Amino acid sequence: MIRHLLSAADLDADTATLILDTAAEMATVAGREVKKLPALRGRTVVNLFYEDSTRTRISFEAAAKRLSADVINFSAKGSSVAKGESLKDTALTLQAMGADAVVVRHPASGAPHRLADWVDGSVVNAGDGTHEHPTQALLDAYTMRSRLGRLAGLSVAIVGDVLHSRVARSNVLLLSTLGAKVTLVGPPTLIPVDIPAALAPGTQVSYDLDAVLPDADVVMMLRVQRERMGDSYFPSAREYARRYGLDAPRMRRLAEHAIVMHPGPMNRGMEISPEVADSPRSTIVEQVTNGVSVRMAVLYLLLGGK
Ligand code: NCD
Image 1 (cartoon, rainbow, N blue to C red):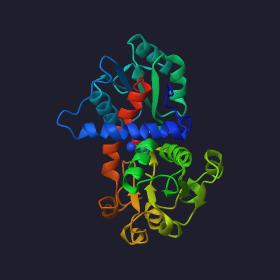
Image 2: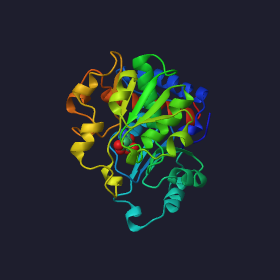
Image 3: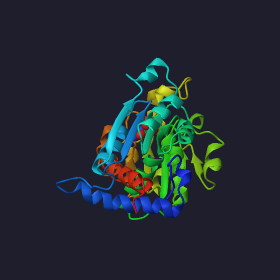
Image 4: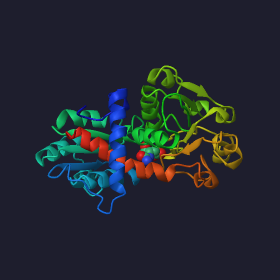
C-alpha cells in the first residue's frame, strides 16, 4: 500500500480497486446498530482544514471515528494560522502530537505534497487549490460502480468549470486508470486546452452539452467556482445555465440508465436545476454516504490495515 494519498495518479488500477472493495466492506458497518470498528484504536487522525468545507471535513471525521481513531479537528480560523503561523510550523506541531495521519485541505495547490515532507505520518489530500481531490474521485468511482456495476468502458461526461476543479482533475486521472472514457464539457474559457491530454491521453473535449448527453452513462456536473474566478469567464449566469446547465428537458436526452452526479455544494438553478438534483437519477446524496465508506477504506489501508 502507498504511504500518502496526494494525487489520484498515486493509484494504480489494483490499488484503486482494493480501496473500492474495502470501502464496500466498510459500508456494511454503516448498516449496523453500532457503527464502529476497532481497527484504528489508539491512532490519531488530524483534520487540517485551511479552506471552508462541510461535506469533506465531516466525512473524514465520521470515517476516522467509525474506525475508533482519536480525531483532532483543526481549522485555520481561530488557530495560530490566523496569527501568521506557517504551514511548516503547524506541521511540526502536529508531528510533536504524534499524528498518524493528517488530512489536509488547503487553498494552495501542492500544499499536501510539502506537508508530506515534514511529517512522519500519512498525508491525505482533501483538496488542494485547483489541483486535486483524490478521495472525491474515489467516492465518485465507488458510486458509479455501485449504480452501474462497472467502471471499465463507461462514458463519463464531466461538465462545467473544469478550469477551477480539483474534482475534475482527480476524476480524469482515476477514471482513465480504471478504464472509463472521459469527455470534458464546458465553455472554452473553462476548459484549459493543455489539460485534457496532459492528464490522461484519450480524454475528449466538447463544447456542446446536448451533443454529449445521449451517449453518456454518467454526467458529472461541476460547481461554478465563483470564489476562484477573477475575470468574467462567461457572459452571465443565465447564459451559462442556458448552455451548460442540466435541467429537466436536457435530462430527457439521457439514456434510461444514465446517472447524474455532483460533488456539492451545488448552485441550484445554475449548473443544475432543482428538478434534476432531486430526481431518481441523481446520486448526490449517495455520494455523501459513500464518501464515509471510501474515506474509512483510505485511512484503514494507509494506516496499515490488511
Ligand atoms: C468540492 C471541492 O471542495 O473541491 N467539493 C467537495 O469536496 N465536496 C467541489 C466544489 O467545491 O465545488
